[in-house]
Image 1: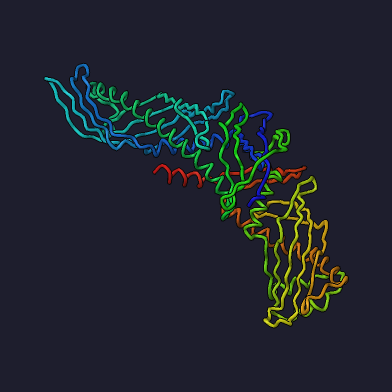
Image 2 (image 1 turned 30 degrees about the horizontal axis):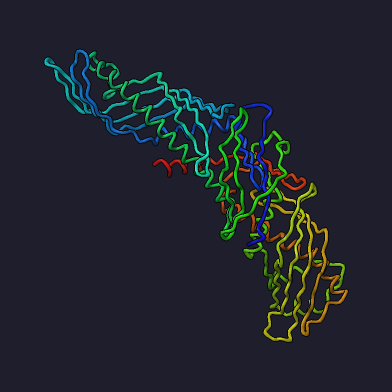
Length: 494
């Protein structure tokens, strides 16, 4: 695939006028993907993730010995520590200029349960028993994760993690009014439990942050692939954080059959993005070109039409009379029309839309093995301008022909050349029948590919497709499906 080349978009950004939000700018050869989540959305999802961390964290058994005033030497063993009740009062996410994401989780109300085996005593008294216990807590959690580049992926360092306990009450068998002796022992255990919970929660948060970062990038790479066609979205440097957005830089290289697109230049500028939507995709012609090349080489640009479907196409009223040959082909009842691209389609984008120029071959036979049966073959150069929309979870393409030329053609028997009248008819048929038919195949086909990667699981809100010179911007608001996050966390943490 020696001609498989493209050019690269330079790094960009998308500063917002006001408000706290998260923005991810992915600069690459195909463009910039910008994601901005409003405060409410970020805080909502952050709270869900932190809640899952608390609930699914694996707390180790705690054993120890200690000499305590009055009661003497104490031994203890806490087992099966787990959370059975949890509520989060408030969460806040702040992006900082020093490349830190500040996450503050306030008023986490959590109740732990478990089993405690303990012994304590001195020459005067000895106590030994195994009891169920509960720990009632009110906790504030502060995490300051730093993002960095690791093996081509975004990774998170959450070692800057603090838990503040405003309340931690240890209840042995639900006893809310223990005697002074038991209170000395439970106060000591409460301190030990604080250390265990702090260590384990911060450890789990760091583990989950790495898993989520990998999951998001792998999901993006999977979404941008189909069959042998894919895209390398490895990051090229550490993410950059400002007070308004997070920016990361990705390769964005189209891959096909072990070949990867080559990158050179870009027309991206941050000023090309607006400031009022949650999610932006900046898609350049240099991204689409390699994808079209790969699709052509993968044999995806073809269609076969037969039977009633074929006959129905030519019920369209055309100004040019149908040639006798085509009438004969239709009347056979078994005729087959095959169409395919003979070379890589060329595309370029302008404010009017994305123009596509392609040479297509059409073969129409009667379906008979008779060598003298009627048949038609021709090649047409077609140029269309395409505009796209997305509504009701479906891709909508509007294609208008700007040029149709019949390059060559013949009909059998005898491979006779086409007459001027036949050429004029075919030009009109390609424009009014062929192009709409191809679009009718592409709309559901591309929609199916996107939905196979999970696009239909998201709530796409008021999408807009904006065409510019050399690139397209898709901007929209969206809703992340809650059940996807929950299912992911369950699979990952359980």
